[in-house]
Every structure is written in structure tokens, then in C-alpha cells.
Length: 347
Length: 290
Image (cartoon, rainbow over all chains, first blue to last red; front, side, top):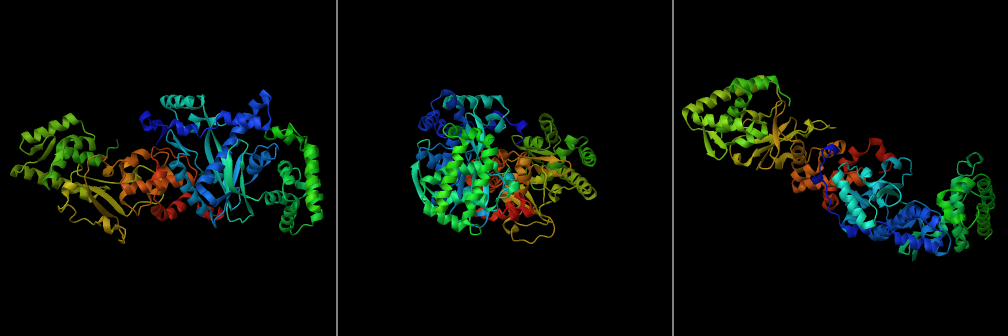
């Protein structure tokens, strides 16, 4: 429908406020998470709220997809490590903004998974875990075709539009509403639910990979917001080795500068290794790095993390690492990481 | 409104003015089948002034050429004078149809425009795949059983899917025309409005890949209007297309329809090859491993 032809009656403005309220991050949840993480300074708390709100949505997607896909998916990637496992060991998370899911049933092409995702979207609508606002569906998975071109043939990127308080585009801009009566009515609804009139819409990135058989384990613990996750995840020992693999396998002097930020993320995620089974990790290391001498692993990691120590402090000043920065310096983290990896390699 | 000078000239020749020509020719054609013409439908389809339409029809009654069958509905009078008048007008009509290179459907010479229309979505929106072989023609159910299709190449709707068509044919659908939206166009004859045409194709023409046109034009189309005019099957086809557009192509679909609730998986399996080939470029399907 051409936007200039639309009238008030063309909009479906019957919104179930109670159902919608469940889809927006409650400030109480975010405040509780800050308490749990030990952030007491009022200014830091205010600055961390936007980051935590996004993390809340990432964790919500993880819970909802589990509800809809059941045992067909496993949780994977940095968000599980940072928002579930590390906080349970009293470690600070780095903020990561996407959710990685692994498709556990056999699939050869993206269309097989996309069919299931379409069915899941229908289910989201059915169980009111999605919302229709001003004739547009939110809280559903939408294939990001543009970004798909840049990814691997077995990874499907999705956009998941959500309502947020702190980041995103104004709702009327995102939903392309130009009729003032409609905007006013929606503002009233949002005010009732959140206390904010100008709510924003942002997109959480979700990636589903398929056709990969990774070792798995069952996770049954609470995330940083206190929600329980009972889900299948990629075994953390294997996850750590997967992160480490490209760094030690394809280290080239001329590329070091390009990958500094990746090295930083690796060093921060490797903090988890001290809570894991080191013998298992060594086994996976030998299995995954067939062409590389284990003695070289430490040397290559020292080389890349050394470069990070010299030139990467700028990246460590980024907003995603605020919580960790308050506790540890970059050189301490790098030293810890090297010590852990040496431990693993020496067995 | 586009006015074709040939067509305008014809109406003026028949009635002295465009309005009178339209009314005369419609009453004459309706006289062939013994059915009436609704004055309000006439003014709506041809965008005529309603007051003048009633006045001219009243004049025909006064002249003994037409009779008022019910309120606002007029038919040809059953008199020798009226029949002669009818034959005279139909002669003009046949001559005009034979000489004018128009795209009118063959029913133009037989039925009043208030009793039939043709669904042609491609006259409103960009289309990727040319024209359909079948011309869906919706005829007033009051004419069912009458030999209105004599001399016309037509295929029954039930045989259409299996028929091997080499030339464009008429596919008649006898329905109640109440609530449907169509109009006269000097270029195309009696044609459905944009929403109605797309809804009709979705509902009745399984062979025409209207999904491709919806994909290409979905920002321009009034999806709610289309959905209102669809049959149950058409609505399922539309819902599948919209769900595909949102989930698979990541497009922003704006509509009041809860299309995820109306998904039909059996139908979707049939539609998927079409949707995929029109939704993605040829090589992209393989390159992206879709």
C-alpha cells in the first residue's frame, strides 16, 4: 500500500498491552543484573543499561527459540559464554550483540532451515512471543539476504526486530508511520507499558549454522539476568578451540594488524578455559590442528597477543569491555590467557 | 481518464453523446438475454453522472424502448420498435468491433459491461512474465445457462489447469458480481480494479505466477484490499507469498492480515519453486546455498 494513501482505519491498533509488556526488557531485570555484576556507581550503571538491554534481548531470543525449536537447535557462540557461563563463575562478560544457533537436524541447504524458521515465525505469533504493531510484524526472524552474501554457505543470518528503550530508530521511523493519530495512539500504549513515549526499534542479529556436527553438552543454569536456560550447547571446551584455531593456524605477519580486535575477543573468551577440562581441550586441539605442531601454538599465540598488547589497547577501551576493564588490565588478561594455553598444550 | 477518440466517436455516433451511447449500447446488449441493467452499476462502471443516467433511462422508458423492471433496474422493452432499435445499435457495435483494433474481450459485442469483467492485473502493475494464456472473465451468475459463450474460444475453469493452450482463451467464471470492483476502460474494455484483478488471479488462476508480480510491486499494492477480495484459497496463496517475503527475503511487509496464521504448507510446497526462482537471482540460489 502506498504510504501516502494510508488512513487511520487502515491500521490495526488493537494491541494486547499485557502481551507486549513481556517483550520489552523490564528495567528491574537490568538493574538486578547490574547488582549481580557488582556495578554500584550510578553513572556506570546508567551507561551500561543500553548494553544490558541488548544482552537481555539476546538471551530472550535464546529462551524463545528453545521453546519453539526444541531440541532442533543448540546454543553456541560468544553470547552463551559471556552471558551464561562466565557470570556463573563470577567473571565479567564482554558485551556481544548476536546470538549463534546451531541446527542439529540434518540439513544440506539453507532452504531446509528457512522452511523451519518460517514455521517458527508462525509459532511465535501463535504463542504471542511476537507482536504486530502498526501492521508490521516484530519479534520474528527475517533472513538478512544482504549480509548472507558475505557469510559462509552453511550460515544463515537473520534480523530480529525488537522494541528497545535506549538504542535503535524511533518506532514511527522504523515502522514508516506518517499519520500523527497513529503515532499518538502508539505513544500512549508505550507510555502505559514502559513509561517511555518514544520507544525505539532495533534489530538483534541471529545466525543459524547447519550441517556441522559439534560435540554438545547440556546446560542448565541461570543467565546474567536470572533466567534459567535448560538447553543444549556446543561443548565449551570445543568452542574455545574453535576460537583459537584460526589464530594459530593462519597466522601471517602481514595480517596481524587486521585481526587485532579478533585477538582481543579471543583473549577475553579464553578466560573460560580455566574452568574447563584441560585434557579434553588438548584432545580437541590435537584433533582440530592436524597440520600444526603443538609447540608452535604457544609461540603463535604469543606473537599475536604480543601485538595486541602493544597496539590493541584502543580496542580494549571500547564500550563492549567496560565491565572487564574495571577489574583487569589488558596485559593481565593476556598473561593469564598465555598461561592457560601453555597449561593446555603442556597437558 | 484516458479517452480513446475511436471509442468516444462510436458512443457519440450511437447516442449523440458519450453518456447516451453507453446507456443505449448496454440496454441493447442486455436485451439479447432478457436481463436488466442496473442504473447505479452503469454509472459506477462507466463513471457516469448518476442523475443524468437515471434521466436518460427514464427517457427510454417514455419512448417505449425500455421498461423499468425494478427499482433502478431497466431492461429492453419487448416491442417491435424496441427490437428494431436494438438491432440497429448492435449492428453499429459489430461494425465498430470489427473495424477497431481494440483489446476488448469478445464478450464486448454480446454482454452489457454491467454483467461481466475481465481480470488483467498487468495493466496496473509491472509484470515480469508477460500475459497469462487464460483471460479470467467474471460473468453475472444470472446469465449462467444462457448461450453467452457461443462463438468464443473458452476453457472451463475446472479443465484449465490440464488444458494445453496455444492461443489466449476466455476462462468464464459465473459468480455473483455484487461487491466486486470493475470499471470501463477505453483501452481494455470492462476490467477489474487493481485489487480485484490481483485477488481474482490469486483465487482462480493457479497457472499465472502472480506471486512474482506481488514481489515486484508489493510496496505499491494494497495488500489489505486484495486480501478482502480473495477467496479462501486465494488468501492462503497470498499469505504464503507474504510469509516467504518476510522470512526468506527479509522484506518489510506491511499489512493487517495475520498471514502466518493462514499458512498452508501443502500449497507452499507447490509455490516454493516459483517463489524461489522469482525471489532470488538465478545464480544466487546456488551461490548462497539456498
